[in-house]
Length: 439
Image (cartoon, rainbow, N blue to C red; front, side, top):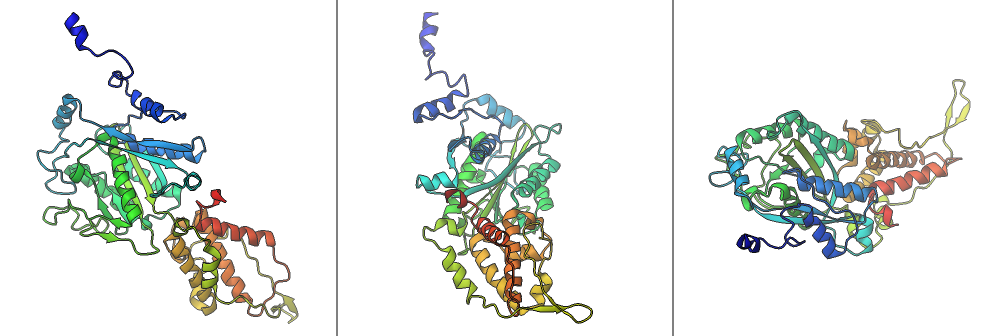
């Protein structure tokens, strides 16, 4: 008994972590002197994804100023590896995904921790910003099979993410696949993507290069995406083999065959799929900061004047007439949010050269600052036009174009300053949503 007693380490805070999983977060908190809640999330392969989502929600609600969120995973228990092998999740050789040779993945070990905060706090402490998390969603497929992905749940999770964010699916440049690395799981995810998206985008996954990190995998993938984001480059898909890939006929998923470099003024937007044993399905959107937030100088007025050209010169009043020929004063109402609709201003844009000129100038400013086309939203049928960041910009541009056109023979007697100034401020907010808290 004495021999056994001496062989067992003393029970203290250094030997307890193997017994209580939350001790690891407690030790990190203790080391750095942090005073927020510390806890461990266990959602299997979706653990670090849900941890980062919870962090973002706490920051959004101003419960916390900074959060350390991520994941760590080590293969300490042979029984776990044996169980994964028994249910067919581990490969006999290399890891391949979306590939006819796919027979599972290879385990990896590692950790990735992200420092998450708001744009305001990052500015206050002069922190380097790698990118921003736009939105994320999580849904459970219960009572479906706990080990298999649910196509319906995955589709609803992805659609919910874009509905909440107001971001267009068409703006996603690169999708980090969950990549089940077996034919069944990969085909389900491929069908999900084809049901949710209708444009070409690049795709990849870290499993063939680094192995699968289970609970930490979403955090490790996020690290790669944020670094690609910062460098403005999409790495090639080294897993892709034309001879074996099931993506050769895909009209949506296009593995990058070489390095893709971001076009100046066109920010990247990334998305990631996650699935965890237990039925959790996750989708997250992240992106480059808008161009204006990366600059320190005041550029708004300079750029506006450069694009707007000469000031508007108002001349005489414009008149209309009633059915008896009597001159009547003309009234123009420059409306606010709520007037947006599909194909708004499209007919005037096509038929009136002056309105087209003004709107094209506004379009150039919007594309440079936001990285996507405002006119495509206005003239199309995408519901993203109803998102405030797009609506206010569309209404402002429409009002500016109409106002400029009517100035050729129209002088307003009364101008609602409140409506006009509010519209102007909302346009600024739409272009620079993260700057507003720093003002």
